[in-house]
Amino acid sequence: MSAAPAAAAAAPPRRVVICGGGVVGACTAYFLSTHAGSPTVPTLIEKCAPACAASGKAGGFLALDWCDSTQALSSLARASFALHRRLADALGGADAYGFRPVHTLSVLLPTHPGPAPASSPHPRLPPWVDPSASAAPPRELGTPDTTAQVHPGLFTKAVLAASGAEVVIGEVERVVARDGRVAGVVVKGRDAVVDADAVVLALGPWSGRLEVVREVFDVSGLKAHSIVLRPREPDKITPHCVFLSYQPEPGAKMLNPEVYPRPTGEVYICGMSKDENPPDDPATITGEPDSIAMLHKIAGKVSSQLKKEEGAEVVVEQACYLPCTTDGLPVIGEMPGVKGCYVATGHSCWGILNGPATGAALAELILDGKAKIVDLEPFSPARFLKRRSRRGA
Image 1 (tube, one colour):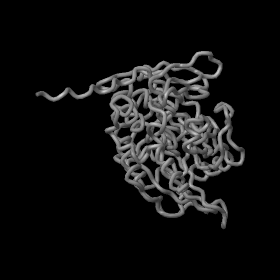
Image 2: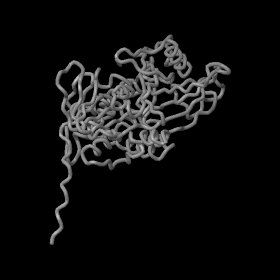
Image 3: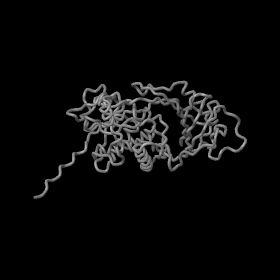
Image 4: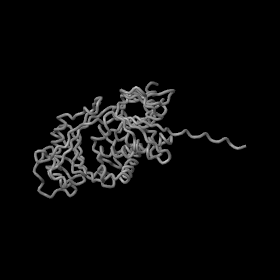
């Protein structure tokens, strides 16, 4: 007697709605649409515009092994770093969004700058960094094999465009579920529910505004400031990303600003941050004057090329909010109790780096039933339910 045939695998969802037009939403759209077995072009709903928040204002620094503090993050980051190279090859990333390998250095800025050293500058110091800016020999943190960069806004928009996703501008108010399974989302100002077989919530620090997320875990915001300058001689700026240590005055808190030259000749500087929940509308976010002023002060200490009074042009002064979780790990996976509702948030400062592997893993989870590129178990939102039950016990 022959064995009964195995039950047919559940058909993959055909109507996928992604909520959030940042890097994670864009990468999820791309890997859904390019899936080998079940390519699925999603609808993406974004309140403001693609890459209008942190994904358009971040630094875009990529590192192979800087997330090795935990095995889970290490696997995610290493897979994503490799995907960034593949995407750059597929999408013409060097021209489309400034992908390039970089040298990465650590530099200690002096509290009180003195005259330039009489001896020659340290050979590791980039020629555009003033010799007086380094109080100690610079340390190498990364090589072109292990560190790279993209322009985050251009990267997000390029990946989203390549996905072919339909982009709808609107504010998602809630997720609709019926009998424990997702049925769609409600968009502010629309009478009809946007139907879906699968919903992805990739709203950064705004993810917690939705009840389905808020009931399971918390997402907080970290307000990060940045400025972008065009030096007076852009052609002299080499591809060296510089991580600084700077004590503004004796006894003051040590600051850790970062300086990222871009292929366009512009230079991005960031480093002033504080815990703060974001406003409702990303378009209303502005930088705080004291933080912006400190970044300009630091830029001038690093290089005369970056001094406003010596001809550096201010391209933009800005701030954004990074999504953070209580345990420091991203949240990636299916929401407990709502079949077909997925979440991806909490990447903090590594959202641009880890966006591709997050999107690829979610696409596999949605279309294949299991992620293969990286183990998502450590990132599951269900981990918060387990902790709450232990506390209750």
